Image (cartoon, rainbow, N blue to C red):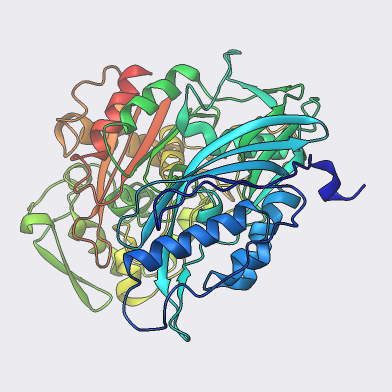
Length: 539
């Protein structure tokens, strides 16, 4: 049986006109034989389409779409090839057996509408209702008013090159639970939706469930998970245990809700287990796991490790913090031209002195030192296998002023909050444990291993400096609410063309390490700091 035969066919088309130029309800038939066709709506001319042209063009497009006449609908758009394929697949691949399209009030060239559809697959029918909109523009060549074709006309969640598909789900559903067996759902923990979708894609079959029937958005990127819009029949979920912590996740969800464009990850240093992942972003991107931003002064944890490991500095050694310093032929300065004469390196770290760090480049004598430390000790840039897609950090070998900028987390360094939480966890224990959401025993996965372990004395000094930062340094005020053994590092990262720097902050309390980034959030203590402190306090 071919694909089109699986959907129920509903015969007949009806059209209710409202007013002289208005339009009302259109029914979509399943046999694709509806007429409709195109006709001139106005004489060709330049300039934006008139209100009458907009209404009439939208009316004819919606009628053709409702009638299942993909050719007629496509001819009323400015991208006939894409529109014809999409409108046709609305019936043959998304199995929409019936749709009632109800337009709203036009605004300028934009016409909103509501689709109340039935999706039918192998005898099972479920309703699907949503709102979308279209815009009428003047054709570039003939001057004819045309619908400006976008995938989102068909469904508002469709992005470029994405498709609507229905059928038997390629993977069974999963019941994901945390380390203690508490169920994790996207309804209760919205930030986990991309993580849960990816876990289902990767582990659904192995978890032992049976697939159901669904309508979904097929992503353009091969490694991206499908996004389910409608479940026609439930499958049997398989049980999938994660190492997430429902309580920490709840705290992370609450924390990011207060800061737009924010992301946070919490990790258990003793195990590498990812305890929480949360984002609050307009674009829905999982920046917590997959972000690629410069980390600013939070990277000084890695720089300090490199300098201590090489014997260039020690926490209690005096290292001047001048207002400016030259690095790789470029002048660097401190925030507000800070100057600390005769300060210990621990104090330079706690006060986040840029020049004290960059000033050690000559003594190091190796411009690739930062790249070697980041990869060899902290595991940044290795192939991580967390259980879901993640960005694993990039600290490239650099030279000249770019090498100097890497000492303070700028230049070409790219990291995610996951990476910086792992940096703090490594500093806390002295051992890189590759972060995971799913234990390594599930699936054919090999965890990344650092080439060498941090010297015990280096870890001890890093923890000492982070403690000082949290109690009397730049993080003292924001970490005041965090009890017990605690440490932190603030950071801000300048971004070309941005009005405000990205706000970065990382810290630990007991056996929890967390890192946050708030895009264009300002200094580390302005936005990312309170977010991390809230999670550490609740953990």
